[in-house]
Length: 226
Image 1 (tube, rainbow, N blue to C red):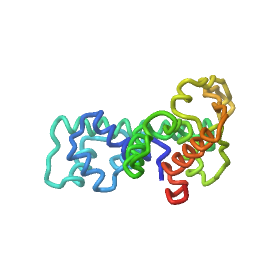
Image 2 (image 1 turned 120 degrees about the horizontal axis):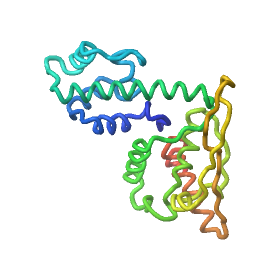
Image 3 (image 1 turned 90 degrees about the horizontal axis):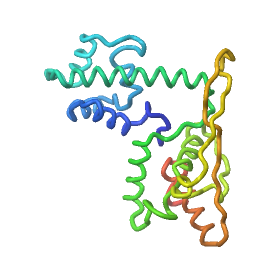
Image 4 (image 1 turned 120 degrees about the vertical axis):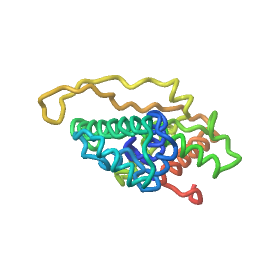
């Protein structure tokens, strides 16, 4: 299943570990211990909102790689990783309360890139990385949200646009709304769906293919059924 949150994506964790400068050995040790998402990291050392102490960090590292001491650089990187994971966790919980759980989430960029690469390796011979075969990122987001909510909805062919059409399309306008408590204001993007004109059977065929590829990427349809 495609992770629809940065907190639930293993590629997002790997990218964040690289960003903070954590050694590959410690990153691999975390994933091997099934602490393979930022969400798990945020609870593995201390509870979100409770600063991790030096003892917490050392105990966690000792469980990951018994007998191996943390270098000064890896100690600092692990502290930063835990802090950022907990901050993201708290922010996402607050956001889900403010905008509602039904608000669609975007597929994390690292997760999307990895799955596109894996799909291209499976479906060799198709030019998936360019032109009419390249799906709009918003199409991945829509199907990933369906998978997460277990609520299948019809997506018409004229909404299955390419990535190039998405980049050239209109940007979502901003709107100001009351938060869930009705005591404050939040600014959010309004939902906007870019469409394309389908003027030939070939364009319709390509639209159906993009829809099938997007569903395959997030696990809503098996390749044999495409």
